[in-house]
Amino acid sequence: MMNPIICTWDAQLLKGTELVWPDGCRDLIAIMTKDQRPKVICSGLDSSARQIICDTETRFVGVRLAPGVTFPWDTRDSRNMRLDVDLSHYLPTFGQCWSFQIGRELVLNELIRQIDSLACPAPGWVENYFGELRNGLVGNIESLSERSVRRKLVQATGAPPRYWQGLVRARKVGLEVSRTDASLASIAADHGFSDQAHMSREIRRWFGCTPMTLRANREHAMARFTAPDVLCGS
Image 1 (cartoon, one colour):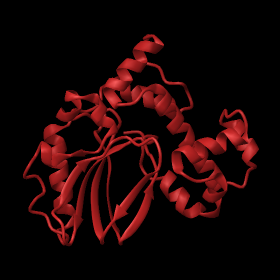
Image 2: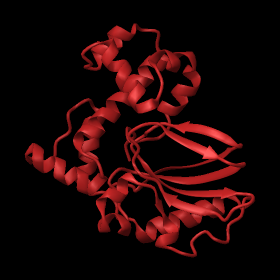
Image 3: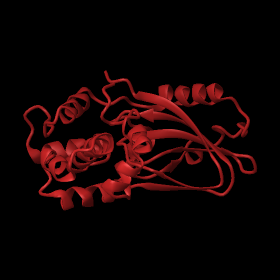
Image 4: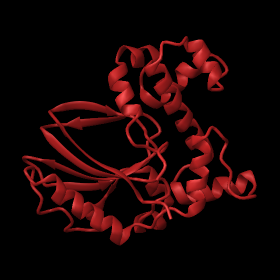
């Protein structure tokens, strides 16, 4: 059985905005500010860069979940996997006693306790599917037809094969652009894009920037592309 948790993380942002790139994972996230009630969400799958807007200094403590992990609110409507779900609708008192100063470990322990209580781990075939994607294969499920694969994958993960194939390729190519000085045309060809322009459009679509922007900020980009994500084995 797949481990439902890929990693834990925390961040503290000042007032302003921050872009978060799609990584194929959903997270259980506690959001705390000094002058507002704490909030806990289950983040949805992103298909493009997400803009985080902080009106004041904000703390985030999160648990990153493996693809295919589901919660009761997912079974009611699989579209919830593509949306941020405010857990106050399902767990009204969860996290309400937390404050901006609360310790990271206390928050993580409670988030993990809720995951242990509520989450249903991904079925084994999901791990096999993503294992094939990590190895550069198309990704298949047993001997099912393409239509059946799409249906099962949407039910289990919230997104169809084309989403996962596109995201995995975009993150792989984004990492190569960031860490090497190889020509963009050769990288595009190596990763199956029709040409350099096609690759540039996909990078802009997923990450909201150009390949040259990735290279100009390569340390920052490489840190993002090498963080635990859908490409990591569980």
